Image (cartoon, rainbow, N blue to C red; front, side):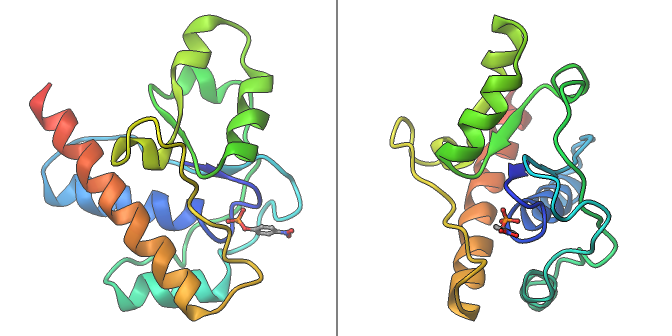
Length: 149
Ligand code: 4NP
């Protein structure tokens, strides 16, 4: 799960995907990262932690890290929160196989629509709630697909 800072959106997506995978009995290696390095080593944004907790997901133990080119080898799927993150990740891809792993998270529920998980950093509690709702829907759909395969 990749966003810009790895403190607002992608830690929520990481926590939610892990939570849903556990509930559905899927063994997945889940992680998140930011394309930028501003918040490396930091806890997720307090507002993301509080909102996730309210919705039953603990992300307080997560720490920020920057996306690294080796992530293309470690992971089968790389989900970007918005088109800017997508572009930044694709810039680091070294081959076609890597590029094929990258997609916008919300394209799992709205194919080809290229919708973003909007950045809530300058937003309100409502924007953080929206992030949770969107990533939850996408992770639920993604894990259903994995169960089918
Ligand atoms: P995120 O949100 O990409 O969802 O983690 C942001 C976090 C920090 C900044 C921007 C967006 N920032 O500019 O520091």
